[in-house]
Image (cartoon, rainbow, N blue to C red; front, side):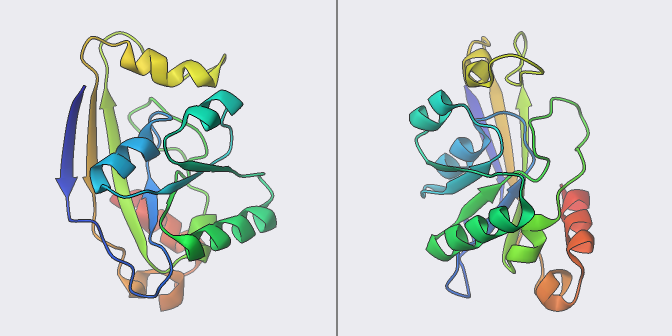
Amino acid sequence: MQLRLKGTDSPRSENGKGVLYVCTHRTLLDPVILSTFLGKPLTAVTYSLSKMSEILAPIKTVRLTRSRSKDAEAMQRLLSEGDLVVCPEGTTCREPYLLRFSSLFAELADEIVPVAMNTSVSMFYGTTACGLKCLDPIFFLMNPRPSYTVEILGKVPKDLTCAGGKSSYEVANYVQRQL
């Protein structure tokens, strides 16, 4: 597999809480690839992860419930424990555009780092439209020469976060435009 990293060094937390990495969502491997590039353990939150994928994941994964209050509470707890990866599109997307971002992440963190993920395949997509999601990484890796490009953008400036007076929707839209 060809791996390519662009962008800045791994950002450090300034407030004692974890850094929130906000990624585009191409395959189920996104948080694993990011953790590998950064060289540190990350926790990934996800909506629909099969039990098999959860068991096999080399990083900690936590399921979200689609209940805004419960998910916010879980993500706050995880951020207090360390760095967190979230894919606010809510599902993998193989299209060349982004799906609408959920603004929940913007309400929870002041240290947000956008991460653009892109994949290139020649035969099999690593995103199932319907079927068994646990097979997505296998299909992606079945390609003769799959590639991942990860671009770590700089931290979102404090004045463009909720702590700087912006609404969560403004922050989510700003991050989405960056990506």
